[in-house]
Image (tube, helix red, strand yellow):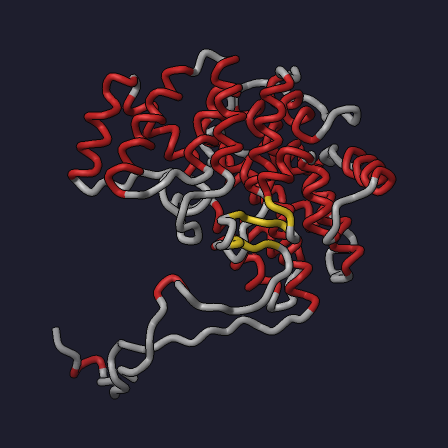
Length: 377
């Protein structure tokens, strides 16, 4: 068996085809259904991108109006779901509460077993609609506040701010947040998407697949990176300390989150536009010190290691300046990635094959079971 090559982390292994997204190496651009994400962020709303991921094309005006009407009509949580949210201790991680309530949505859905495309699209829209409500209600409850009911006259991003803070912020803040949702929506066979597709390959239901994907995204090597970026910036504290901190981190080979990516060779194509809208928020919210610290870290990493920042690097401080609690950053990621996950789940069902990889056994050779009295002490 020594001639078998092991691909740790499935690095370099192709397991299927997909029409959902691609990183085009020639342009170094992440694309959704053929559209560069930076172009989508500049010209489209997150809701339009959600429609694109599920249907393969951007909506026309009529299609978008119908989509928005349906999404906005499904934002409320049932009394039973809200009762469950109220049972969680304040110490519970927001990703755990979100995972549990999303699973409960499946319990409440009478059509959970229907795997048809139309049924799964409707379920996907329902989760897209309700996940922001879950996150905002959970935040308020754990902070001793009553949840704020969703509104149907606001965009998904605006409504989330309203349910979370009780008001809608400046347009530039909403735009920055909406941009982050577009950029986080999809990224190929990442760990959580692969988890969702693997569960789907057993012909389990869409809620089970999404619940598993949420568990995968919770891991700090995947969805928690934007949280880690902000913890790093808070640890540094001021621009005057930044250079010494990053020099020490590099000298001691400390992992610095927010830099590098398995896919991009010349920098993350999402970063320039995300950095632009982050800077606009920083200028509105007195965030100059975070800009200065970030610049020192980026300049040092790029010049000394040739490693560029990834999307999490500008998103972490952007969310912080918007006022979101750091443990909520990853649930916000779920709020976005539900679109990519469900697009892949539906694609998996189109031409499904059970995922059953092999492993190379390297344990004990077959042996006999000795009677109890003959076993070594």
